Length: 325
Image 1 (cartoon, one colour):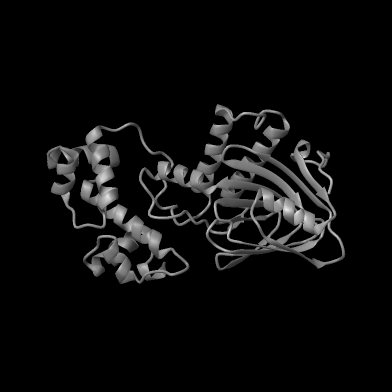
Image 2 (cartoon, one colour; image 1 turned 90 degrees about the horizontal axis):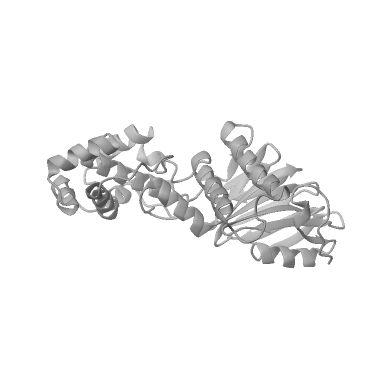
């Protein structure tokens, strides 16, 4: 196995692997990502090329195998992987879907769902590896509250639509900034931190996920302490039978003053805000594609006591019935 820097395009100055040995490739790539099975499915050889640069929470990679290979990483465990084909095609099975990846269609793998892939010999991808804990933190900042569980993205990314084009442009801009010596030049600094946070924030905003309805583009300006207390109390106790008086008591203000404050800050009443938090939590749980609770169990677990009202409010907020996921 030869370790070189090479001169073959994007991230060319950051070559970490050049080999024609399949076992050596599996071992080296596993060290950067996770353990996996790698088998040759057609032809007699590979020509693996891997360029890599790492930041604090995100790494950028350009990877191609130069042969038809099957890759079975199982579950990634602690990172998301945005895969943007630069050339060629790949077939990805993930989260109950199959994505035919190409320069017009990317994919994103979630940490807690198994994956199987087949890369064609001409497939070469820009891979953006994002630490799960970091993305979860960015998502909670955007939502303005703790999330009820992990973020799970839809696997397919349409690179022909505006959101997909934007994601591709952001990833390429980061890689090009590395090539120009403006990013990931050594010890992480404010520029690297800002670039990583912006990419994570845009991924959450642009790619559909089970928290898309919870994430706000703007978390809002600093608000009075009594509103922050009220919001924290609602998010921590939404599943309980709480009302306006309970929220006001925890916030330390008169209920009328709390209503005025919520109207100014959020454009709605505290009870309307509470209802939407409950609906968001229900939406999150009902969007699960595996081991999903029933609609009735979900409604009661999220603080609803009247199923008919829950179905009505759910449809008004999300445009579909709870039974439709």
